[in-house]
Image (tube, rainbow, N blue to C red; front, side, top):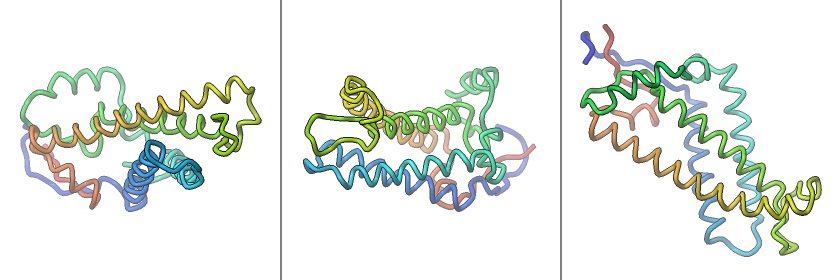
Length: 194
């Protein structure tokens, strides 16, 4: 563990925390609607538009938001990722303010998969004459039909990413003894300074 005293630092701003929890709620609700929802998916569509708006916000905020929210502040190169992986099994806090190098890749993966998911939903045509994506007529009919399968696959990938996300939080909480729940809710984290 690094020497020095623990210092409380602000990690994520209120807008980013609100984005996180709104996105989590909307993704869960939309996944459930996609699996168990009614035959007419109007609410699923509207929640998808809200997810698209949140993703647009996050992409913009990743360039112009406060320093911890910017992609340049938490995306690391291969050497940082490999170095981090080398010590992941140690029962010590990682002391990364915000996302670890591996966590940053998870953020990018989640955003990318969600963007693809929204895109496939917009162009899907399941042949039921009701639940047609609003942009399905902008692509060929074969692509619109294939988009239905891609959208279904994307839902499963999102479920796996969410379960991985929760599993990693539990890993850090229980194995690494880091308080990761607090930064997600309050935006503050304790880190050791040298």
